[in-house]
Amino acid sequence: MTEFSLIERYCQGIGASHESTILGVGDDAALLQVPPGMELVVSVDTMVEGVHFFPEVSPANLAHKLTAVNLSDMAAMGAEPRWATLALSLPHQDNDWLAEFSQSLDQISTEFGLQLVGGDTTQGPLILTMQVMGLVEQGSALRRNGARPGDDIYVSGAIGDAALALASLQGKASLDEAAFKKVIKRLETPVPQLKLGRALRGVGTSCIDISDGLIAELEHIAQNSQVAMKIDIDQVPVSDSYRQYVSAGGALDLALTGGDDYQLLFTAPTDRQQQIKDLSEALGIKISKIGQVLDRMNGNIESDYPLQLHFHDKPFKLQDNSGYQHFQSGRTDPE
Ligand code: ADP
Ligand code: MG
Image (spheres, rainbow, N blue to C red):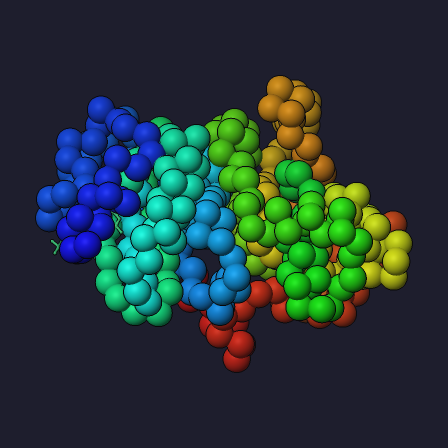
């Protein structure tokens, strides 16, 4: 099969279709229309075999995760996903692999209103890059820099399962079969919190998705917003599987620093509490209040470190406060 027919067969007609797509796959570039009053929201993520996923992961799950992590960035901005481009570097042409990848890509893209409008296909090590583009009403995107002293801090869903699955695969945690089945699903097929992100426009003062671990994302909001934070670690929501792991002697650290959760972490003024309760019920998404934003000056912060961690009102210390970093010598993560 030529490169052209490969693209035709596996990359054309993927996902939703939008009237605002003037030209999709097939020309030198796509043509997209941003409606008046909207802003274009753009993000890109790369997954490298051996770095972001094990060689054993199925092509269907790879397509799901690549799309989900990109959609999660749209969720964190309060944006509605529209378009994607896909750069594939493949070791060889494997039609079974491509068919499974393409079908799964179509499924998740259709589910979340994403249309594949272009990309690039080359031969090389297995590397998958997706760029997503979405729309948000002018001036209403959720950013990392809007947290204000006095705001409450919230997290959606439960965290730690993906990190627990990874630890289990690496032989660092032992789980029974039922628990493993649940947590591996969280690692391989995370669900982007798009409805919640949209609902938080005009409600949340800052928002971020949890990809590098809860603690690392709290640090990002604190630094970007120039605030300090008090976190009640005992309020951090974990799943039944994770609780089982803790009962068997496991630490909370994995849930706090592990990452790959793709839940939303956000702040909101205290007078929004009822509204947040209501939207949690309306969406059927658990939302937990885990702390409060403090002023940097009056936060009794002993060092430059912006987080005060408490466990039932006593200071809590992490064994390993690193989060996931690609460039290990200092915080050189080029975000
Ligand atoms: P060019 O040589 O102009 O870059 P390509 O042969 O790379 O063109 O691509 C031809 C068309 O197929 C373009 O519209 C491009 O966007 C699309 N395309 C190529 N690879 C992919 C892919 N992996 N996913 C989606 N569209 C793709
Ligand atoms: Mg090209």
